Amino acid sequence: MSLEVLLKNIDGIELEINKDLTKFSTMRLKCFGDLITIKTLEGLKGVLKTLNENSVDYRILGMGANQLLPESSAVPFIKLSLEFDKSYLNEVRDLYTLPASVTLSILSSHAVRNGLKGWESFTGIPATLGGAVFMNAGTNLGEIGPLIKRVFVVNKQGEEKIYEMDESSFSYRKQNFLAEGDFIYQVEMNHFGVDPLISKQIKDYLELRNRTQPLREWTCGCVFKNSKEKRTCLAGKFIDIMGLKGLTLNGMRISPKHANFMENTDSCSHKDVVALINIIKEELLLQYGVDFETEVKL
Image 1 (tube, one colour):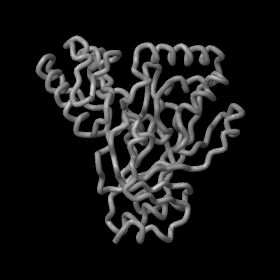
Image 2 (image 1 turned 60 degrees about the vertical axis):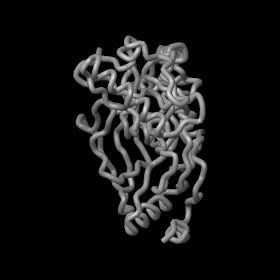
Image 3 (image 1 turned 45 degrees about the vertical axis):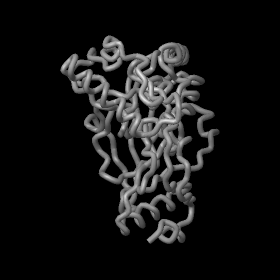
């Protein structure tokens, strides 16, 4: 049964068949697939329940920064687009209840205006809040995990669930509580107080990222995770030492600016990224005996 027929009686959604999804990836990878845009909680519950009952798999699509989109997909993508009144951020709150589809850039602007301690940890990360929670996004200034109090999800049966966070909820670049098929739709997060110096710290860090990372290019962010055992074991540093900066394969290039970034300089596809990643992984293992895990979801 087609998606049009399966989802025709569900309100609060938009279905686009065989849509060009290239712009939904920060790496601008060529991609076509069916896109379900969710505009209400009831719509999300209806879609997930219906897909599950009909054994239809799905992929969650945020800003497309931490996943490589395939050139074509038989599996539909689901994108959350819940209404958010930005006036909610006109004041500082002890606890924020936010839709998972709000972007970190909007939250960072609020942190700069008000000096929110802890929010500097996600400075400059191109992601939605839900995506950031899913991967415990972070920078050299920290991780988002310690800020998260509760995570609201709809599971693949279309049921609402609430996860209370504790010390075991997050680890390096991952969360440890979501079940397969869980879809984050809302997040409660706090901050660690107000400090006017945070505003300057965020601005300075953004300036540093602009100087040292290819933020204006089509990238997916850092490609590899740094070593869990040795935090000084930096993937970008090793790739740089091997002299691989600028190496290009079919238009996919290791950034001359930061070796843990890859830039789409042409109109590359998923297979081009994976091919270059495999070359790098083989060289890292051969030269240093370290099998670096990818941070980006392949």
